Amino acid sequence: MLRVGLTGGVASGKSTVAGLLMALGAAVLDADEVVEAAYRPGGAGAIAVEREFGCGVLGPDGAVNRRALAERVLSDPQARRRLEALIHPLVQGEVANWLHVQAATPTPVAVVEAALLVETGSWRHYHRLVVVEAPLHLRRRRALAAGWSEAAFTAVVAAQLDDAARRAVASYVLRNDGDETILRARVVRLWQLLLADRQRCAAGLPLPREVMVVE
Image (spheres, one colour):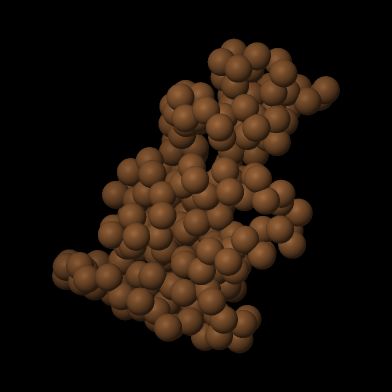
């Protein structure tokens, strides 16, 4: 089984690409859903966050209010690092368990979608890293259309690495700067490349090191 990390900046289209890969036959795990589960009432993430930041970041039901938490940490790098130190080990443990389960199935490719694979160094746990890119003006337009405020979008962009840093460790860069038809064709091409990588791994052959732009 080929382990693939899928990442990109906010509103770059990671989730759309993940969905298309799933339709082609990949097993896909959204790390944000793992975080969401950990933030539910009584979850390990909710307990840890309350202990670190107080009950002001919890909702009436005891679940983490992610908007309140984001407002608390996005403008405070030290607080953000404390949060990451709490949550990332929980997420990485769940991801490792999921990958272990997938390895026992006929799944050819297992994809983990996560925003901070490069920032946390987790990209090293995968055979291949796919980075989804889109121009900043498109990402801003998509985020605002999805209900983000300009301030929130700007704060998240500032907290993430830029495309150049992600590209520096990428295996594949997939550009999401066209319409849906163009994106689908690019994802199909990416899928073919990933299947070829799986065959190389199965044969004990090394994977190419150069970055490939899928277009």
